[in-house]
Image (cartoon, rainbow, N blue to C red; front, top):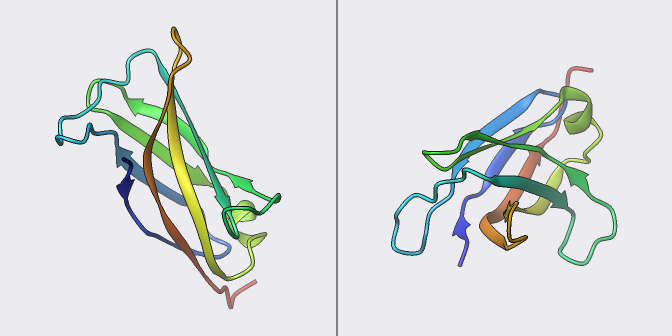
Length: 111
C-alpha cells in the first residue's frame, strides 16, 4: 500500500518535492535500476492529466524528486486534484505505487 502525502502547490510557481520510497514495514527501497512516473488529475477517472517530472534523485536512499515548472502550475486551475507516484523496476518491469494523495492548487494573484 502506498504512503499518503498531500501536496500544496501555489499556482504559477516552480514546484518541487522529494518523496521517499518505503516498504510497508518502513524500510527504504533502494531505487537502483528503477524509473519513476507521476501524474496529477482532477479526479481518478479524468482523461486530462499533468505529468510531474519524476526522477530518481538518490537511489540508495529511495528518494524520488517530483517537480513542475511555473508554466505547468499556471496552467492548472485552482482547486483539489489527486496524484500518485509509481516506480518501475527496469529489469523486470514490475510497477509499485509509492505515494498518493490530494494536491491543492492555491490560486495565483500576480500574473
